[in-house]
Image (cartoon, rainbow, N blue to C red; front, side, top):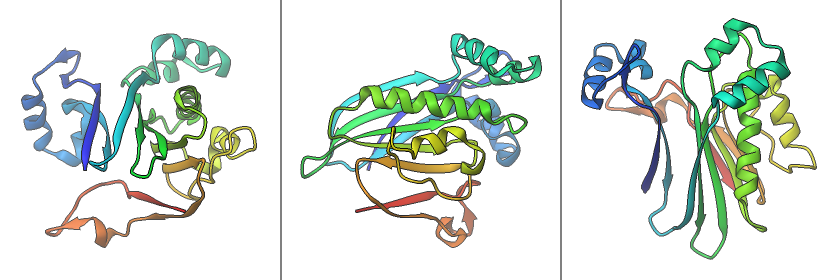
Length: 215
């Protein structure tokens, strides 16, 4: 597999930028607690090596102008507005031609985590869909995937995306990590059991990976 990565947030200690190596060392003191608070964040798409990458793009999901416009639309209080700008969130989009000639758009996002008001994440998901749709060519399979940070049951965007106007597949009924697809039939969506995530006795991720089986 080949990895295509984009940095969402550089390593930092408080307001000060720090070298990546220092960020990793600080995080290693307590990985479960610190996570990306110091080491920064990145998104990555893994693609089979025989696929041809046609284009790549990236969009900051919670840019200042977007936050300001959506904050007025959603009538957000000051606390929510400040929380929305705390961590930069991005979507990376890759368009590729697969063996056999099919082309697909993959949009990989990590939406803002704000459990007090998940409309923030939902707004970023809709922005992702609009961005990916604008980059897609006729006949492309379009995949929206990543940490949506809002479950399907509380997401107006996910409900809209499965309607006739957008035509995406149904999301998994539980969880915030999702895969939604347009242009090909999704036969099954499964979440990895804990046993599959263990290597040498260690649990590799605090999120359960999601896998979609396509027709």
